[in-house]
Length: 244
Image (cartoon, rainbow, N blue to C red; front, side, top):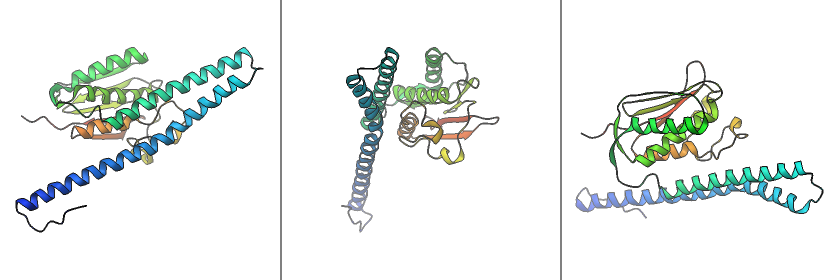
């Protein structure tokens, strides 16, 4: 329960700080409840599909080798999706990427390393322009945020041209040449579990960009999404300049 503040003296300032703490705790509690509710909804789909495939394998004796192989492959895909979803939910719930000491680091070096990993992992073409960009932050968290931006760009634009990455003055932008993001979706792409109508048939949990936002928010920065000239989308974030 909030404390009524009747003065601006030391007691009043203490009461103000106490109220702010209560509001932060209430916000955290509501966020955790929403995450659990949304996660429960998202987990039902792969679990139902997995259960169905396993039941078919166990009860149906007239399956051909091809049908059995297809059911096993589908079950394995559901397990992979489920493992990825559980891991990302745990990341969001535990705030593991928003804890730990702040360090002086070079954001351009983190982005270059992430691009090199993405090129090896996905075998795609990426172009990068990176200026020396000192920031203050958590290396593992920022690395995860950049990895998720690149994963998103590969998912949507890897088959339509090179992915272009720019780093300068605390700003990281990743541009793809895919179908782009509609105006209606731009305000929602960083929401937890949000997937546009065109994304629902694609693999993914809808948590990748929300993890980016969580990391960037914890660093006092801001995320953005913009349409790209000639098609595609530009997604990224901006971090504040380091203190001298």
